[in-house]
Structures are given as structure tokens and as C-alpha cells.
Length: 145
Image 1 (cartoon, rainbow, N blue to C red):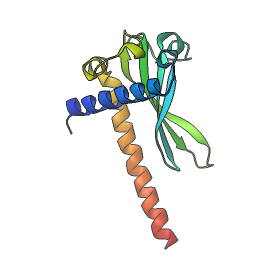
Image 2 (image 1 turned 60 degrees about the vertical axis):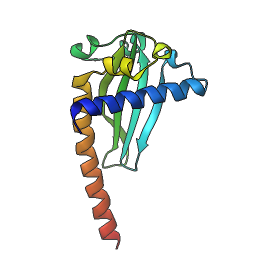
Image 3 (image 1 turned 90 degrees about the vertical axis):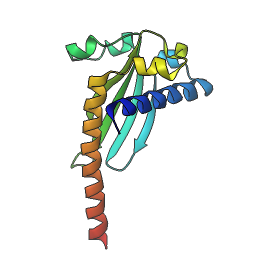
């Protein structure tokens, strides 16, 4: 899949998440979260945050601050350490818009807000984590037999 088609796919996914949240009565302009995937070793969550909320995050890198606009989506990856405790292992700004989430009406608007640098970093980290998770699952399965 090309980077362009992947960005289109993510934009469509984000729009569907916003639309579904609105249909469920969530105030999408106040910020919300959507857990996309969860396994025993890895959790992927999308956080939709306003500019004010996101700029309150301590130690937010300067290059990310420059990309923050009215509405933002971050992909967060959580893993499990050796002791079995969850820990955040990746946070990536993947979308930002000057409009409120409730005002986004099309995939075209979503695609225009894709943060390519954050999406690439997120994709690379997720692929590496999934490879590790799959290998660990296969090994555990083989050892159980």
C-alpha cells in the first residue's frame, strides 16, 4: 500500500470514528478517545484533543507544537513491560485541523489535515511492534504445545 493510499485509509477511519462518536452522543469537540485495537501485549488508541488540551501536555516537542491546530488526533501505543505493567511506548500526532471535529464533513477535509511525519513514525513503530507481538505469540503457542 502506498503512503498516499494509507493516508486516505487513515483519514477515512478517523472520519468514521468521529461520525460514530457523534451518533452516540459524544461531544466530539470536547475531546474523546477510541480504542482501536487491543491484545495482551499491545493497545492502540486514538485520542482526539483540542488545541488547548494538547498544548497542556508536558514536554510536547516543539515540532509537534507547530502542527497543533483547533482539533487533533494522536495515535497512542501502549505495551506491556517485563513485569506486566502497561506503559506508553509511542504517541504520534497524525491529524490536525483548523475546524472543530463536529464541523468536518468529508474525507477530503480529513486528508488535508493528515500530519505525514507523525503518520509515518506511527506506522513504522506499529509495524515493528506487531512483528514482535506476532513472533512472541507464535513462540508462546509453540512452547505450550
